[in-house]
Image (cartoon, rainbow, N blue to C red; front, side, top):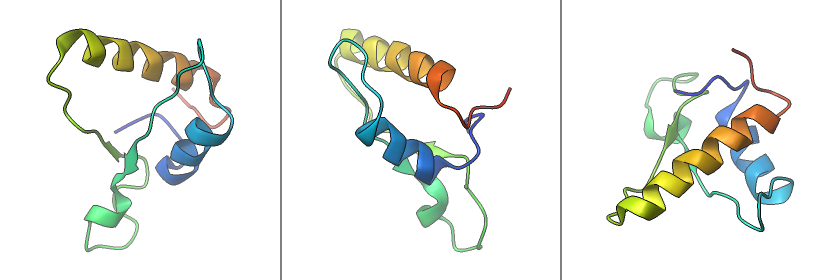
Length: 74
């Protein structure tokens, strides 16, 4: 669960408008994984990366993206 207004919009923003050191993230909004309408609107699913260094870099990139995303609310 993320402090964003909508995970679908956040996912689109990551691919279309966000870049940090020429890198971005691709995430899967979790809403499509629920049978109940409206569930998971601010949740995402991540692919597990077996390489610890890459996983750490992705988490750092996600943190930076959340700081810049206009729909983030803490």
